[in-house]
Image (cartoon, rainbow, N blue to C red; front, side):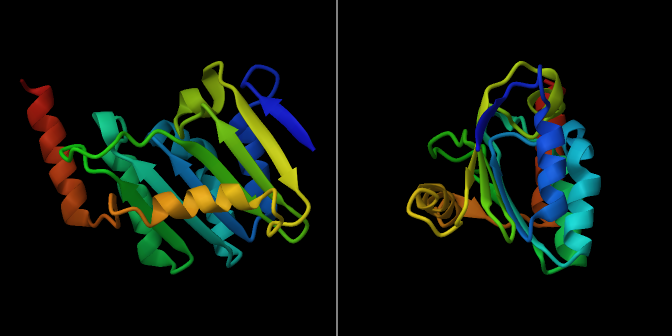
Length: 183
């Protein structure tokens, strides 16, 4: 099945929450993450993790749009379970290309669901903005048709611009953002 999600007729937050219910593996790559978006999916994310399933986020840091509070909340999940992984792409102070994908992969026993489009993990991207996302289902997550989605995800995950943040890094982001906002 293939369909579009535009947040008018249907909300991406609803689709993601439904997918977390049956996924045994979820991989999310987004340019921006805000607490407002995380709050819309966090309960389902936590239920997925408490069921022993694997979840991984790759979050972009370009344009200083990703909120340190949201990263901190995800970092806490890495401390409570080895089934969750947080990866950041591109330090805003580096001269690396801009990270701007929005790709959500959910694997369950019957299929792989790939969602690609314009929605970041923000309240606007998941619910309020007019967005355009295509939802694709593959009967076999290892099929030739599904492979380009995994290949892309792996390419960004293993990029030299990726790193696993720690609490000190998040404190530096907060301090930097405070200094910039006071100018």
